Image (cartoon, rainbow, N blue to C red; front, side, top):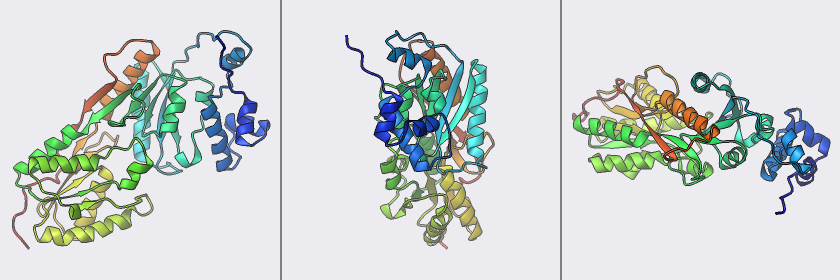
Length: 359
């Protein structure tokens, strides 16, 4: 049987169009090069399956692949929404939870956050110095690179059809939202608006889940009407234009709320529910007296929120993902590939009886 030749650093250099010295320095973690240069080198290295480790060098010399030495080091990989996450409390909380629950399973941890426009740059993974990885909010090229090298568990990726062979842990958000919508229906709510991510977001992120569409369908099934004109999906939402876009939505909603045409606002995530609640209050709209607000809270923060929401149980999700990864590392068979974790009901103060008095 002819063994496939493994990629060398010269192969990476030739395909990337840079010198071997430049490629070597970049793959060893040096950041003094232009971001586009680094991204090009790392993208090529991943696509070729290049490995600079000692075991790879032995394989290229014709030796059999030795049993990999366990390091008890696992990685938590996150995609960032911006190039600089400093000060992001959610990122910090997520890393803290992962570190803690991994330690309970006997693992040391390293957290890796990447900004997709800069590429996925990770010497630890390239050298196979980690035993496995938990990947959250991923891009498919990253998942492919990681899962080809180490046992991998996907976290919070929904029902994506990509990588069906990989184990994944997902929150049962639809069940949580169904509970909230049934509560709203019992309180007399029949007309709602919805706020969520734009279709462009789903097109750019192959793992993104069209949750807003699911919630709208659930509302209709329960008996809560929601027209297309009351479905707000601001295009190209980002941290720079978020406030302006939410202000625009607020101005549209206020007359609808005052006329009684909308008594409930359904938010795809806390980034929308927190903003719309604050902006409506600033305009003199009482919550929940004039309008109620419900949604999903995906924040890893363990504190209680004022928003009535279906909160992701990150503690249980991390514990489950790390336990599955431990089983994979130890070659333990698992009964299924997908594990769903129930959300927690956060009562909050933003859901009340529907206001039936027109103003």
